[in-house]
Every structure is written in structure tokens, then in C-alpha cells.
Amino acid sequence: MPTAVRQLAAVTLVAAIGAAGLVVTENGRTGEARPAAVVVSPPAPVRHSDARPLPAVAARAKPRPKPAAAPVHHAAPAARKAAPAKPVKWMPTGVGMWIYEWKKSGRGNARAVISRARSHGLSHLFVRTGSTHDGYAGTGVLHALLPATAGTGIKVIAWDFPELKHPARDARRLARAAWDGRHGNAPHVAAVAPDIETHAEGTRSTSRRVKVYLHTLRHYLPSDVAILTTVPWPSTARVGRYPYGSVAASSDAILPMAYWYDNSPREVTARSIAFLRNYHRPVMPVGQGYDGKLDVPWLRHNNLRRQVPAFFVTARRMGAPAVSLWSWQAAPPVAWKALSRARSWFPPHNKH
Image (tube, rainbow, N blue to C red; front, side, top):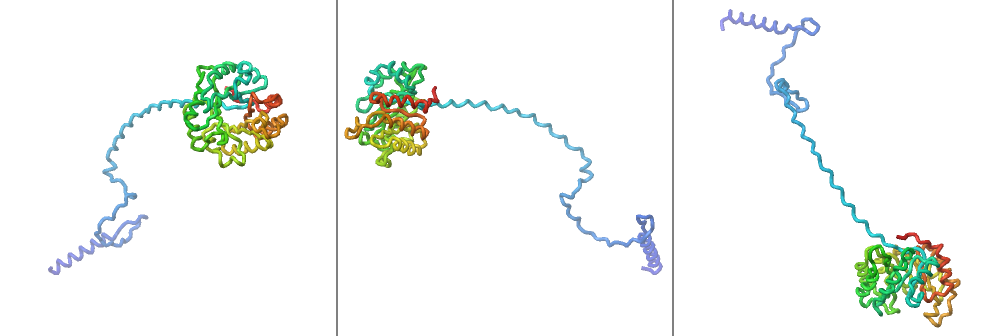
């Protein structure tokens, strides 16, 4: 490059640099800005959270909102049909009496039986309707007795003595009594009381046979009829041998035969209730309303004048809801008198 031309270019370059370095500061004064080096570098990545919408995007029309979907009205679920109420089983409260031989109890006159029952404040009667030995014998008794109870509040309980040689057959026999004469609103059998004895009385009372019997009985009974199983009182000799657990598992209540003979009626009654209460079933003891010498001739006569009231006092103290005496035909006047006095201690509650 010629000298003159180089000089001219240098002057031009200096002037350009001077003009570029003169700037106006924020306070209006002029100052000299330091020329910054020009560096070409790739743009820094933009974080999503710091990014601002571009002007072109911001200027765009906002999309129209989609029309709201019409509300869906769900039909209210149909009301569930109320489950049918379970039939209420009548359970004894108050005082009762057992009838063994119908012809020897009020001479088999139903009106006479009910009249005496009312005069002594009885709330229920246990009436024998059969056994393995003599079959079903309830039709004549029930057809006479049930109509006589109309309007009296006295309930009839059918009882049967099964030997359990054929448990299912025995069960169907007692279930028949629960259906006999049952129609409309007429009085009918309110409960059944199978009398399940020990081997000494000729009963094959094994756990398996007892289970078969009670399960079959429940199957054939009306749904509102309770099973009140009668058992021997739990003496030391019987506990562990007699199937009390199998009886309780399929019974609505347990009725121990608290026959004291030459024992203390207080002890026998208290032990029976305390032991059987562990099975969580109502315990309704049956008292010995007869002289034990009738069963065991070598025993001395029972003093029922004192012993029967002692039975009732103990049952009341132990909270028994119902009590009864065995039996109508064998009970002397002192037993009937004690039974009549006890009615105030065991008032009937659940009549229906």
C-alpha cells in the first residue's frame, strides 16, 4: 500500500475509534466507554421456568374454551329392599311345671290343667309328646291343651325323650309336635325341650349323636321355635363325660335337671348354673319337685318344704330367667305352694 494512502486510512481509523468511545452516561454526562471484545458464542439454553412467551406467540388469539360438558345426572340408586326380619323365638321367663303323664295331670282335662296353672302363676307348661320307646303321642294332648291356653298367656313347650339310637328319626318326631295344630293365629307350641339323658338312662348321648340330633331338629322346626335342651346337672362324675359343649352349640337355652336327692339343693343349683353359664346360653334350672325316694328307694325322704324354696332362692340369686319343677303328677302340695310363691321372683317378661 502507498504511504499517502496508509496515512489517510490511519487518520480515518483513529477518528472512528474516538467517535465510538464517546457515550452519554445515565446522568447526562459524557464519558468514555471501554470497548468490549466481540465474542460470538452459542445462545444459552433457556430454562422452562424462566422462559417468557415470544411476542409473536403472545399476540396470537387465545383459543376459545371448549364448551363445558353437560352435567350428567346419575339416577339415584334404587333403595335396597329391606331384609326380612328374623323370626323372634319365644324364650321362657317366669315359672313352669312339667307334665309327664297327661292322664295323671288334672285327669287329662285341659281346662282343669290351665285353671290350676293360672292359679299358681305359671307362665309355661312342658308337655310330653313322645319318646323313642312309644313314638309320637302328642296329637291328642296338643289338640286339647293348645286351644285352652288362648288368652291366658301360658305357653306350651313340647318335650320328648330320645334314646338317640336313630338321632335323625328322634329329631323328626319332636319337630312334628312343633307343627301339630299350627295354623293362623291359633295358639301353637312355643318351644321344644328334648330331654337328653345319660347312658345310665339308656341314652346313647355321644357328642356325634347329639350333634346329628340337634342339627336335624333345627332343620325341621319352624324358624320361630327355640330349642331348650334338658340335661343332667353337671356333677363331678358327669363333667368330661357328658357332651355339654355339643348340646350348648345347637341349643337356645340349657335346662339342667337340678335334682339334689341327698345333696344340698343350693349347691346343686348353684353349680349347675355356674358351670353351664360358661357356654353363653341362658340357663333355666329344673327343680326336684318330688320325693327322691320314688326314684331311689334306699334314700331317706326329702324335706321339700325347705328344699324347694332353697332351690328357688338360689336360682334367683344366680340370675336365672326362668325356673320349673318336675313334675305335675308327683309334686306334693308343699312344692306347689313354693312354686306359687316364687312367681313374684321370676316375672314373665317376653310374652308375644
